[in-house]
Length: 140
Image (cartoon, rainbow, N blue to C red; front, side, top):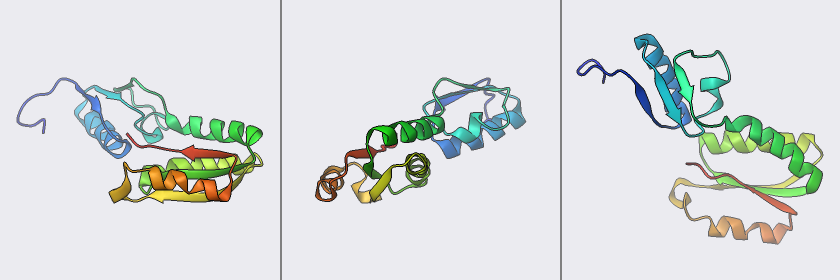
């Protein structure tokens, strides 16, 4: 990509996997990388990349903090999330913190790729099990 035309700065809104790849790639090129969006914890939470600027939050600590907080307010919960690597990872982080703080997850519902933007059936289902709260994660 950068061998045909010189690029001075890489920037954009990208997902977590691409953000990690781009951080390593731009590091080898010794070029700045500016990221927007919650691009995942592996880019900024581990070894610091001195060439990466991130203009967004790291969503992982939010999941654990909110899991603990919600458990203190509501004792039963249903999770609804996309059936994807990010959906599983962030929902697992939230649910683990929620359970560790004394909450009980009644059910976990996963939206398949074909249903990614049609949440109506999955959000209607929890009414049958009677949770006190619903945790919903949307990608993008």
